[in-house]
Image (cartoon, helix red, strand yellow):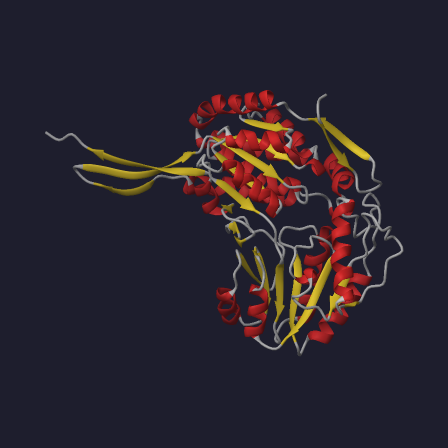
Length: 460
């Protein structure tokens, strides 16, 4: 019997979409086709590859009226927010704009005797395993630059957003990207691991859980296939005594609650200087009490269900454990909270790092807020985490923020903003958040390998 993947809609628990997984043989054939097609794709002029990729991006944008409600059905994001095409296009466009410079030869020197340079060479076949929380934007982070750099791409999307890779492939093929150069595949975990272990791919990019990242690295062990990972996060915000309080509250609470807290770089813990603590909490509670939890297909809904009941149950468990250990909850249960995927957003105080809600990734609409006395205490607490993706600092003093930022174990330091991915900067992390780097010039460097040319001229 052929195994099927099922997308269970968080709206009502119904089966929204199913797709059969490829057999091991069919999956290897897909990878083989990608390898066969890659060389001719890489031989095309860079400008031609860029034009085809950007035409594919535009074709995805043309689907947006269908994509937005489809995302609501699959992972619960309210339709009022209009999907992901803005960020999808911004990231692809930036990578297209910088491609020529990022992929240009590095000239080392030339004289009458020698010519020396370093060229960026595509890896070959890039395997992209994308997550469900921002399924289009996270996928395009790698798909666009990988194709532009001359790689073939095989995309495997999360079961929760089963239809996204299919839509992307359809759009890119319609725009002229060859079908074997960009393939969407439906795979189970065993087949995925077997393909990696059999060196079906030359580069693996995985975004997901820490456990999933470990599985990818185990599968690649001994193959010398590079594996780039973006895994869990527990991103902190730190509000200093001179911060713009209203701006800090609005941005950090939105960063904690938007998309039902299911953001890679969402804010999961906040440290506030003691002089602003009470006012910050009061304003934060007012913001959260104003949310409308409900069906994401309703334009009035500002907070949809979590993508899966089990995700919501983990958040509830963290909150319940914290309350039993002495934390204080500030938000009364919403009437729409059904004990399943629809979850009341919560603000907790009197929290400590002994509580899982301040240590483990929550990936849901809950935030713990702690009082701190100075930069040293805040820095110690921000670094007291197994994760390191982003940190958000709030102060009018740029030099102070830079000094604090230098001490934080993180991939990105934000000042007076949060929860944003700038495609001009390297998207990277440290500790259990993983390794590697996407977007920016460094993203191109990671999606290619250096090849050195040391050419001795024949002289008479």
